[in-house]
Length: 302
Image (cartoon, rainbow, N blue to C red):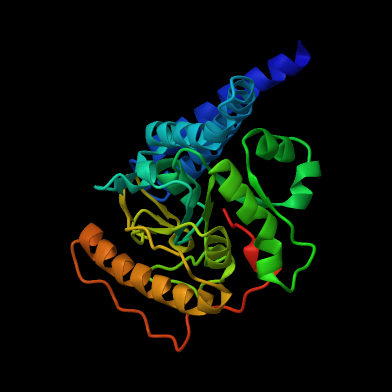
């Protein structure tokens, strides 16, 4: 009973504090940053609790492969209500719904990309996770129940070997995966991409499934942590045409990675200009936008 009282008081106090900062933001705009950060955390907790229940239920009824999709959609709805931030999907060919299995890849800007996943995550898809996470309480259990694709990183020097088991799971289960080839958040104020790591491309080639690029416009006008900016708003996300990997081998991965990055960067600049209604700065051209791949490069930053 004491624990229940404590939780009730915490929820009431947390909610009151969040509302107070939202009201204060009418006078002090920077308070809106704190208000939406607080709202985002509670939204994430709500979605996580929903995800645990949903993954158990869907596992029991034999539909576990859509557990991560259901959790993502829950987070999307809750965040729209609590923060006013939404990611608007541009997918005229219904590529998210029709392409399976595939390796979906997206640019990675900040922690807000968890919400971008909420809008763009397709059914019968999962994030990748390292095999050691299976033994982690709660998180590991959720990943197992929701059908996550696990990657064996015991050999950190060979990306292809690390992907071998995952590629077989993709083919046998017809389960897509979602990855961020930059490997970490860029935190860029302008439309830029970090060099791409090759793990996602090795995986697609080994599994002989298409790569589906997903490009999110730069949203520093909505979230820019360095200036304590966190506004409500709509952020466009575009799904590009699938890129076939049939007949490709490991020897083609470098060129595939480079050409895909160039395609996504071009679309990123265009989409950002459309979202802002003005020309966006063109990033300085890099001599090589491909990072050296290893098993350690396969992590998913979220």
